[in-house]
Image (cartoon, rainbow, N blue to C red; front, side, top):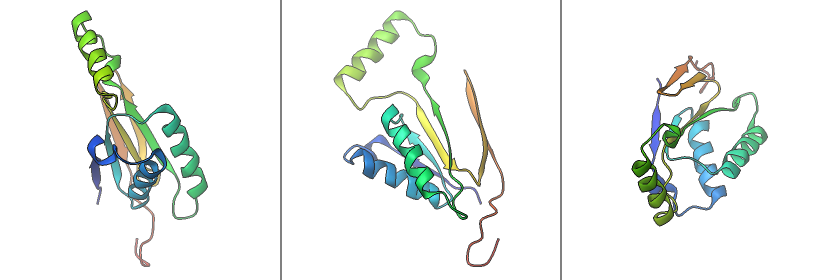
Length: 131
C-alpha cells in the first residue's frame, strides 16, 4: 500500500530545523511519502541529505527528494510584486511544495515546468518476516 502524508507549514513552524528534519525523516523511514507544504531552506535540504546518509542501512536505503517551486513560472509584474510582498510580510511564506519519499518505494520523481510525476515501486522491505 502506498501512503502519502501531507505535512503543513503550520505543523512545522515552531520546530527547530533539526526537529523538523527528524520529523520528516521519521515519517519517510515508516515507508510513507511526505508531501510538504512549501520548501525547505537550502541548508535544511543539505542537512536532511546528511542525516539520511547517516541512517542508511539494510532496511533504509535513503530518500528521493524533489521540490516544486511554483515561483519559477512566468507571472505578470503585479503578481510578482504581490508574492514578493507576501514573502516579506510573512517570512515563512514559500510557494511550492516538496516531495520526500523512501528510496525503496520511490523509483523516480520526474519534474518539468508544468507537472511532477511520482513513479513508485513495490517495497522489498520485510516487516515481521513478511514481504
